[in-house]
Image 1: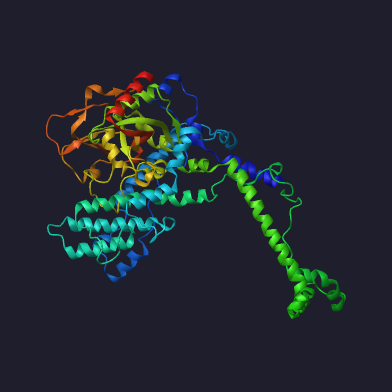
Image 2: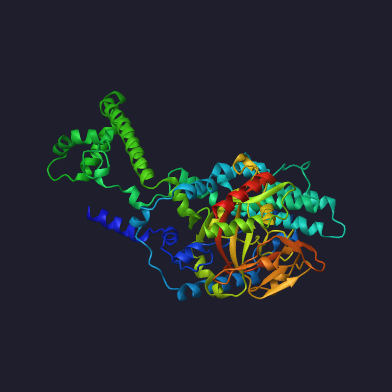
Amino acid sequence: MASQQAASGRAAAVLRRPARAVAEEPEAEEAAEEPEGEEEEAPAPGGRRRPGGGAAPAAKRRRAEGAEPAVLRRPARRAAEEEGQEEEEEEAAEAAEAEPKAPAPPAAEAAKRPLEGDARELVELFCDEGMMGRCLEAAGYDASRLPLEQLTRDTVREGLTWLRAIEQELQKPSPNAVSLQRLSRSFFTAVPLGPATAEGEVIDTPERLKERLAAVELLADVEPVYGKLAKLRAGGGHLRRTLSQPAEEEAPGEEEGGGARKRPQTPYFRYFAEHQEAITKELGPGAKVTEVAKKASEAWHALPPEQRAPYEEPYRAEKEEYAREQEALKARRAALAEEADPLVERQYRLLACALELVPAGSKVWALLHEYVRSSNEAVPPGRALRLARAFALRRQGEEARFGRRASDPNRLLLWQGAPLASWAALLSQGPRPRAAEAPAAGLAFGKGLYFTDLAGVAARRCGIPGAGGEQGCNRLFLLLAEVALGKCQQALQPQADAGKYCKQGSVLGQGALVPNPARARTLACGTRVPLGPAVARPGRSAFEHNEYVVYNAGQVRARYVVEARLLSTAEAAAADAAAAAAA
């Protein structure tokens, strides 16, 4: 009993949920009303996984045969990118040391605050593996060739590498059709997104390349979390204290040392117990136990089947009864564990963040509603984007990583959209740039973190409306993040190598349509909110709308998950009237 109490104490000391505790800390009335309030959070492990692992076995075979293009023989991570990541980690470590540490609550106290209401429904939606599978199927994924449970990071990386080889072929003045056919076949062999035959699809245009790239990027978002979520649904991930329930919570006879049925003895041990005394007398005084056991074993193996039956038949019956009792006991304990630590709570811990519904009609809600309403550019004609719900968001460890950038005078609240199947990875790992192995297609300023000041533009990244039926034809989820832009380099034309010269600042691709500067709002903490509507910017530009790019994830602090609805103009007018009445 003492060992059990010690184990429970250790579990209570280690297993904490700092994100939720932070979300419920009492705040000043002004901070509760303003989205800009600076708050401290206890740093916790989390963040993005560092890409690792070698090339997939298929790629190794192709290299051995000399059939792999030169681009695939290059290292997956360049030294410059590794140095940038090391600098980012060092900065995070320094910020973590400098930031005051808020004490985390004990696990028992955190468990008294279950996830409820809208936040619970949001976690269940984002962590639904069935939804992820249907969204990937809509993007062309063939799970019969490779079940999602078997999808690995190496498979995703190999697919991205083949797409990069195709991109390089397409960039040539005269792309070779035979090479494109061969590279396409290799891509579809590596990633089950289409036919893996010689007569299959050929990725021979930039448009087809972007389409397949979007599907593989969706796979890259699903892969890190799908297997973990499946294990949670199968009953894994319980807190240790829920797996060792007190004796009073268990059925009679289940306590350690109680009246539970013991494992039945095997036929041989029954025979040995019955004949041990006789064999000992036969061997004489002083016979060793090993000698008795050896003699009994020889006698047992010499018995004919009919003489073994009296020992074997009771054993089989008792074994079956014991197995039934163990299954029932396992089911009861699983039910107790599920009741004490439900699936949605385990999913919430996996996301490693704090989510709290923003009350409708509050000042924060009104600001977010106006930001969505006034930035509807790029929305289809006859439709309008409106705020449905908003959730304050804080990711574990992000406050420490943001660190000194909280005082950057050039901070904006900006949008980023993501498909529904990507949100579990987005919350648990934060915004991530495109992988080093991937093509740079569609990226005006290289591989960085892209944001926009128009909600309608961010909504484009939400993928196929209604894929899988969960997202609906008008339901979109957008991330609203505080981005420390620092020294901002402005550009009117794409610059593919901008990331090489802009590690700590940012790049702004100035659009032809920009939010009206006169409508911008500066919050008490200094963060600016570029409210619309958009107006024409003087001068010419290659960009339709503003594109903000940073190359260091430490410059981003997630603030809100915004659920928006794509409504008709009449429905949008009614929503605006309701919002005005609630204000």
